[in-house]
Length: 184
Image (cartoon, rainbow, N blue to C red):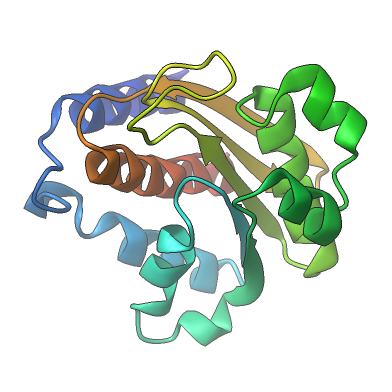
């Protein structure tokens, strides 16, 4: 319960913050803190990114020692890339759309399994400027999967701001979700 309350506070802070000119100072340590926690736990991570197009993985690679935790990952911007690289059934995509909790979950599970990583992260959503498949701009689903215990958490977000702000908020909240999962 305490961790869920802490996550809710982070979520509110991130949603309200101005990310238009980049990641605000108060959130810049989150990726590094996450990588350090993964190192301490001797855990590895992989990601499958759609709307963030590699920003999450790039944030990991910016941290010295990232090679100790990063197994690799995917940028699966199109439906075809999700199907070909992550082996997501076109039936799942047709039934749920790519902007859905189901696809975020499958993305996180697939990237962890394909890359033999302990943690898999899946980010999918609509950065804008136009809605996609009936989902408004700012709709984001993030899945974080722990392969060792075969458990996934998926959260839905509705971020405001520019395309860049939506993408950056998605990256930071994904790191917070990873921390939440590995601390449980």
